[in-house]
Length: 422
Ligand SMILES: NC(=O)C1=CN([C@@H]2O[C@H](COP(=O)(O)OP(=O)(O)OC[C@H]3O[C@@H](n4cnc5c(N)ncnc54)[C@H](O)[C@@H]3O)[C@@H](O)[C@H]2O)C=CC1
Ligand SMILES: CC(=O)N[C@@H]1[C@@H](OP(=O)(O)OP(=O)(O)OC[C@H]2O[C@@H](n3ccc(=O)[nH]c3=O)[C@H](O)[C@@H]2O)O[C@H](C(=O)O)[C@@H](O)[C@@H]1O
Picture (tube, rainbow, N blue to C red):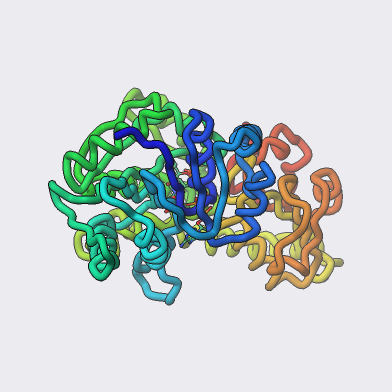
């Protein structure tokens, strides 16, 4: 049976581009989000997130009548769930995944499901979450006129198809990337491939739901481990007075070595989160993954100590000044270069900490935002040139293109991204 109407639950960084992509292939798409502002913005043909080229696709999809946004699910032939999967913020040493958004989305679609529908969990999930979702669905339907069964002869097909697009390149990668398709049964996988082939040009590779969940977590954990190696090297090199950027460039000339780049820590709501989904379920076995998380999470503290040392050095060389007269400039707040996303950003956390402990002026340069977040109210958002001119100490936290190729920034500089070496 062809898919005539497709519903996407959660219209954020993943759900909205996915919904727009189906709509661009002339499918009728119903986007569902609990955020009324997002729904209203989309229905005006506009977008509430920053992603290159997405605005044009959404505008065309809405104005041609293929995409509409609503707050309550309506019947459809396929439902793709792209809601957040954070970890529980309860201060535990090993954070646990929070599946409440998936549970709420499941509850919302249950009353409109009909026989033959396909439900795909796209959210990054711990192993077992898709089976759990299928359980929730059948329990939720058990008391209704049409109870669901699952297994090989299920009335409703359930799959996990994790999303792997890179923010900033979402529109291209949605089409070009290979997809991992993990059905609860082979029929579920086949139906899911049929759906994605609407716009995916990459290969749709079939596996089971648990392997698909683990594949996504493995990709992001692998990157986290590799970045941790680079971050550890940077701390060792600092102690040994070796330039880590030169060191990595030299080591990478080996045909089988490819070390990533150190930085102020790992940010974003994926790489800094997803490895915990493996560690929390396998605390004894996941030793490397756990250590990598700890190494990357402790890097901001190391940077803050460098700032404190730089202030002490500066005061020693300038005894006429007091600490209140030392001006620090922080360059970049986003979690990585050339974006405006501040979620889980080590640059933001370090700058907030500097604002909290430093009694002198803190200048902040972030070309991608117009207003400082509340935690930085004691700082001043300034232009790049003003910061360079006024700062006694420069702290480079993000390698935005605007900060590169500046010879001026070399004086009293803590360069966490190595841009002074380029
Ligand atoms: N942003 C990214 O780069 C990537 C994200 N992912 C994963 O995709 C999932 C979604 O992430 P994002 O799109 O970035 O999150 P997001 O926060 O940008 O969007 C999620 C949307 O879901 C909505 N929502 C929450 N509960 C809902 C409910 N019960 N019913 C309907 N809507 C609901 C929220 O209002 C929000 O608009 C997460 O599991 C994330 O880990 C995977 C790959 C890349
Ligand atoms: C394996 C992989 O490359 N996953 C991607 C990742 O997107 P994300 O933008 O979070 O990844 P990223 O570019 O590695 O950045 C994450 C963090 O790591 C830092 N970072 C990155 C590379 C590096 O050499 N050094 C470094 O310190 C960045 O500055 C940033 O703070 O996570 C996304 C996700 O799962 O949401 C996923 O879809 C993307 O494909």
